[in-house]
Image (tube, rainbow, N blue to C red; front, top):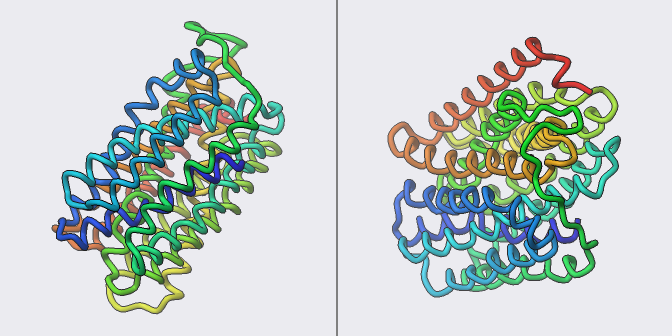
Length: 374
């Protein structure tokens, strides 16, 4: 949990800051969104190889390398946030984040008893969300006061995770099996639903976190507070969905969670349509955060359940690819769309996308309810 807090704290600290810094420096909304998209693109590319890294090097070494790649390059932002340097540094940092996301989630699944997997992933989610709840607003506030300092912090926080990694147990997964095992069927259908679900939800988050500070100039403190509320509300969503998965069945919370994601994004779309009081942003943040947290947890447990214990690292890679590809694609796509139709309409389109995915999940449960519950 301490390692996850440091890793995701460093990620959250600069997530809205880098696009804002590029925008302040004269870059377009599309380029600002591209910084997040490129970060996530290298994250996804790295995640494809992490299961093999875990077999060869073990969780601790992969996690330590991830902290180094995520943290140290952030110092380069202090020298320049011009388009080419900023995009290059974002790409390098994405390599570290790819290592951290897959190895961290796989380690939780390796250590937790199967009957408590939902709550274990929920507890790890609490650590991650608490870190983001602090670092998202702090990053924007520090950037407004001292831009260089926030980039130094963006390097130092992930590196602090090395202390926690030194105390992790020496877990190393076995070589990945090539066929079905333990009665599990590693099929595209079983994995596709949770991975597409988290991609749809994270696309909204990627767009919101990258573009809200730009959409509301002069209200960076309010947007930082709203993003903190999103992370705080994720605590409720993640652990609540974990308890539902352990007691009522895996997959039952996913469609309702996506509906909440859609509703939250819709309120954000309304909030940027014109001058609106702070409480509108905070309502949107609460609704979105609960739905986003629940979507994360239930979709992750569904993916682990589909894979079986022998394939936890593969399951973690598949889910994290959906998560990060969605985050990057959402930032990039909305950055392009809002330049044409405006922020309110762009966010509304993201809300429609999320509710459409909720319908797909609900239909899938009707088709194969026995495979999505346990």
